[in-house]
Image (cartoon, rainbow, N blue to C red):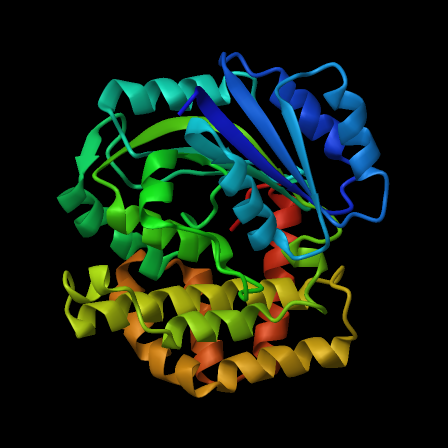
Amino acid sequence: MSMKLSVIIPVYNAEPYIKRCIDSLLKQTIEDYELIFVNDGSTDNSKEIIEHYQKNNAQILLINQGNKGVSLARNAGLAAASGEYVGFVDADDDIEPDMYEKLYAAAKSGDCDVVVSNFESELNGHYLITRYPFPVDVVLSAADIQKQILPFFLKSEQLNTACNKIYRNALIQEHEIVFPAKVALGEDGIFNIYFFSHARKLKYVDYTGYHYRETAESATRNVAVKDYFGRAVEVYAAELPSCYLNAMSGASIQQLKAVKLIHSVMAYIHIYLEPSSNMRFADKIHYVKRMILHPDVRKALPVYVNEMNGELGHYQKALLYLINQKSLLGIYFITAYSRFRNRKARGIII
């Protein structure tokens, strides 16, 4: 590979926030890197904004294609990437100036295939840093990855994003790892599972350099368009790569899948009952009813309670009880109370 890092940025109608993103990318303290913008059929001025920056910044490469979706946009970037490592940034987000220098240094110091960092989310005016329960600044072997990291993908979506990591490009090319073309949600998680199943060395750094920003297309505002619960059920029912089947029992796999599904249901209940959601009230209630009555949810619920009981607070236990009782009215009022309590707590997410 001819340079240290390639950063791939898929762009679709990102005019309101892409300047902030580009500015943060151009301020990176790492030397010898390229920025690959993939304009995925934007109909606003995103292309022209990138071209304006490109005139004075030789590290910017612009690829234009028709609207094919974020996965194929990222794959186009991967095909053009010449960096030793690859990173991903979404056009509505921004990063700290030292982010890629820190991640690249961590990768080189341990000869790692992948480095994982924290990320900060801004949701409804609240800020939340996502951290992971992995050893910090320790090089994990392939056996460690199989034992600690791959199971984490089964029980949580927190590690799914591709944007808080850098990946060894040679490993991507060797195993032809790409983002799935026909998956509307969760494409990052699928890419990560296949990459991590081939990774030999990993390091987690307790550093937060990536800032995820909520936009009009984010989950809490786009619930009327994307079927998040439907995708969660697909993941729950999907067959897993052989790396799981060779390392874990079927019972253990189902336990972790149940935990992830119920976690998702609890989160989606809050998203769909959020007053700002772009849905009619009757549609919100119908969607929540669909979730709590779904056969897979009824099957996973007792498994989740058994596995997570010692880690649940009073609110979570009460919400699970109401889900088990199929009480739509109770669920509506307890989530309304939770939102009220969150506002009083001034940003503490419960």
